Structure formats: structure tokens, C-alpha cells
Image (cartoon, rainbow, N blue to C red):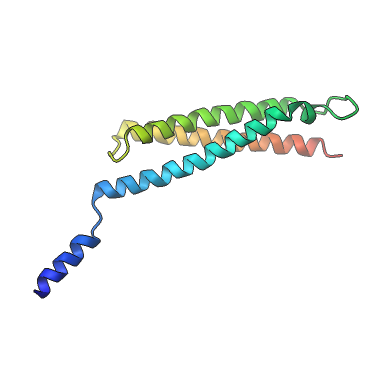
Length: 132
């Protein structure tokens, strides 16, 4: 009986490989959702307030308005890349990825993150250049 209870305890505490894949995919999906939300919010704010960002109240164009355009393009590319990764994970949820699929997913994540960072860098540079 003591051996049976130990076997039952180990059977319930053991995590199956499919469950580990699902949990990892859930964490990556959540991470992607957070990054996509930040990209979407940044795009929404930039597009909504573009005329106020690029032009001063006196009607004078600010220095380096191309940095804002650069940031918008970076956020769009990031959003598209992260959305592709998210779609791939949702469509193949719970199944292990082969080497080729993992490579594409990793490349998409890196592109999405780098473009998100470059978008932030472009906005930060624009802000520093145009400090009053």
C-alpha cells in the first residue's frame, strides 16, 4: 500500500511533455500579447497626435520629424511580425514545433522585438532633439 501511494503521488506530480509544451506556449502567447498591445497603443497615440507631435503650436515644423515616421514604420513591422508568431502558436497550440518552425518563430520574435526597440529609440531621439 505504501508503494501504491508513492506511485500515485509521483504520477500526479509528473508533468507530461505535452503539458510542458502547452504551458510554455501559453507564456510566449501572453508575452506576445503584451508586446502587441504596446505596439498598438504606441501606433494609436502616434497617429492620433501626429499633427501635434510634428508641428509646434506656432506652426513651425519640429526638428527631425522623420524620426516619428521611422518609429511608426518600426512599430508596424514589429506588430506584423509578432502577429505572425502569435498566429503560428495559436494554430499549432499544444504540438511541438519542428526545427524549421522553431527557426521561423524565433526569427519573428527577434525581428518583432528589435523593431519595437528601434521604434522606442526613434521616439526617444525625437523627444531629445526637440526638448525646449
